[in-house]
Length: 169
Image: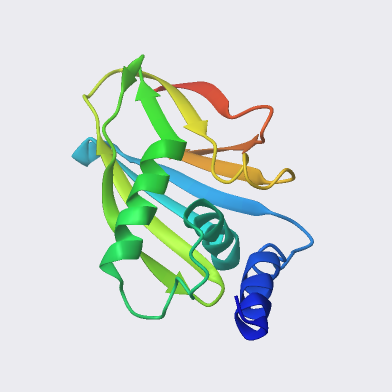
């Protein structure tokens, strides 16, 4: 291996591990019950560089991952990321998440998905959210649940990835 190739390899190997840091690591997820449509509209927001660093770590990809334009390959990666790290159950029945897409807003990655649910008088929800907690030790995930006029917020961490809450229609 030539000295030039060695230097490029060295920079890529060790430079890729020098991820930019923030003062805090947080995601926010809004879970909005739309009762007249029997639908849950879900939006999650992340710092772009945190998700990009995770993807680089998992795939050894050192190229710029997120661009301002839509990308089918990244779309598949984000869909997989959502399905692995976010689950919602209503009355002990796991809801199927339908991934809708993503967009970039400055330094934020905004992801949209939804679930349909059966109508009920009582709603006991359970939410599992492990976004980035296994990758970033200090990661916090805030989940806002909107049900009719009620809004509840929950803070999840690597030690507490799940919450339960009950609503009455």
